[in-house]
Image (cartoon, rainbow, N blue to C red; front, top):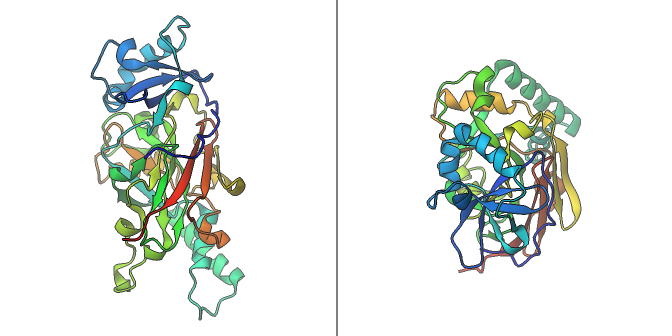
Length: 334
């Protein structure tokens, strides 16, 4: 769904180019090479491959990367203006791996917010206990990862439809790593070699359906709480990994209607990108184009006591990756 809200002003990204998925009015989507000044190349024409998609480009990322650098440096290319193009989600992944409880301050805030009404602990005592649990997880090297559906992906400027059943829809802006080649049982030391680049994801969550109230021992219900269509605005770009000096030193910022709600460094992550990829790969085989969402920092709506509602506009940015803007639209009750 195309947004009626004005797209975010073009935000420069790190490095000489980024990859996006673009389309002209009424035309088919195509992989585009985007320059920091707002120009774009249709990579189908530039590489002489009419059937090229962003996913097939990622499937041979290592081989094609030098050619992309050459195209970015050629001022005589058939450059287009982004003003004349629609920016879509940069990739349609086959698999989405989502890291939960991966920002220390965020986990502490959520645990305190979800305390039972009769919890005898003070806020300070509760925070101290959760902090100790986080330290234990880090020491024992146990990330928490679950799986999301590709149908949740939407564009960086598309409207987000809030389902009528979602009582407490919340934002969770995140750094996402995009995989470049099959990864299975890779070590932490080699894990970053499997990253094509990084992008921005907003992993929306309905807080009211996270936990199963009918059968508490089951625990979390990620299908219901996170997988509504369009619940993962993605992009605008995939910025090559070589253009991001340190993924553990990026600022994640989300503004709601212009007011800053999240503003935290990725150095608050308990497990970094390399550790997450290695951990996931011990069980699952990651594929080119797959997304690894690294978790969301403190400052979610449940923390502020202000959840998403019709008409809200979210502006999200991560250092060096550009910016996205999405407007919330309430679904009509059936």
